[in-house]
Image (cartoon, rainbow, N blue to C red):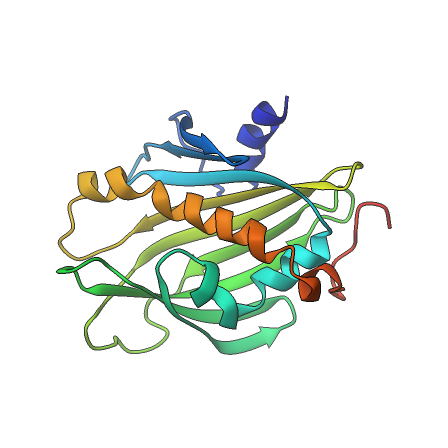
Length: 215
């Protein structure tokens, strides 16, 4: 039942539904990683799913702690907030360390936090704003990027965490090579996420714009 639900809930993030089905690529340590073909790109869309007994505020506190991304997000070289628009919206810059001889990548995204009043489902959507700042030397600017965290609480205190990503890394890296190696990123990020969310500072966090399911 949970597997079916997580496949259905993925449409919360991306308005354009794919005609292709999700395919399970890896399942280990309580983390499942899926991929599927996309209609307008040779790059595959990715999704990782995990279940953690924790509060919604703890997860949002970690995801909004941008300075820590270099320590737990896969291949993150730099992470910083360019502009804080409000408590629930900001513009974020991040770099991705690429294996030699490929050039490192970077991207700029507009990030928005929201929560459904009835279900208490939280979504954090990141949409590419590639031209917000000038290009950076020795980096390939990613111009196609959409990502979304979906946090689905349950009455037993377990939160289903979905991370969905569609990205074209740009440059001259062939799509087949990117697709072959792409599973590692979502999996490793979720592994480290589960370790970090257990830290006391996040477990004690209370976010003003987030309501728990039992509130």
